[in-house]
Amino acid sequence: MERKQFALGDIVQMKKQHPCGTNEMEIIRMGMDIRVRCTGCKHSVLIPRAKFESKMKKVLRSNPAAAAQAEEGLLE
Image 1 (cartoon, rainbow, N blue to C red):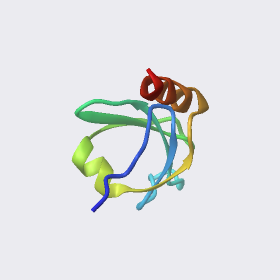
Image 2: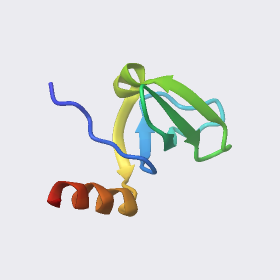
Image 3: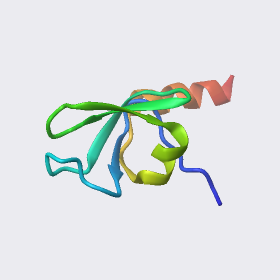
Image 4: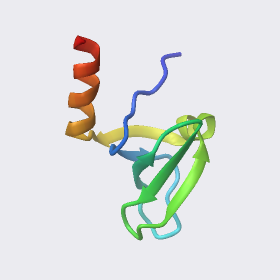
């Protein structure tokens, strides 16, 4: 199965809603753990990468700055 692609600053849709009622999260830190911030109430949560990848449904909006940096890295 193909791994899901996401980057720092992306807005992602999760499978389950946050208690405030929204299921949109912004990725604010990446590493072995992923820190996401709820777009509704601004609460942040640290989730292990494997669990985050299984709970993420899709990327709603990509961060254009992160996409440009990734593209530059591929070109060099």
